[in-house]
Image (cartoon, rainbow, N blue to C red; front, side, top):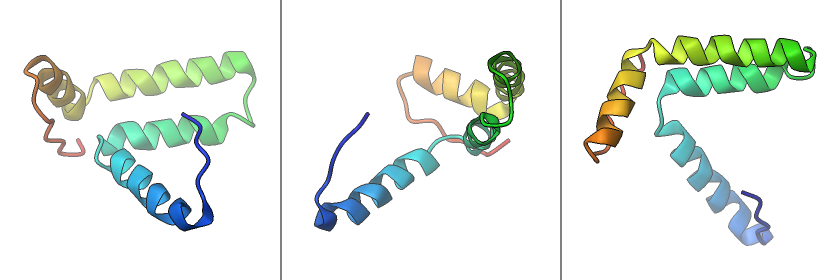
Length: 82
């Protein structure tokens, strides 16, 4: 989502976004950052392979299972960063 903020609103909105991101599973955040950082170094095909492998790593975590269960149970997840 793209938004434009006044200079006075910018820092509070950036902090709000950072807090929202960091409330999610840390393993998934790390894998996402790794994929984004590597995008300049890889071809599209290599990038897609990396993204698929990182997604597979995330799917094997306790946090993935917790996030899925929380979604199905309509509750807030309790991530353990594992």
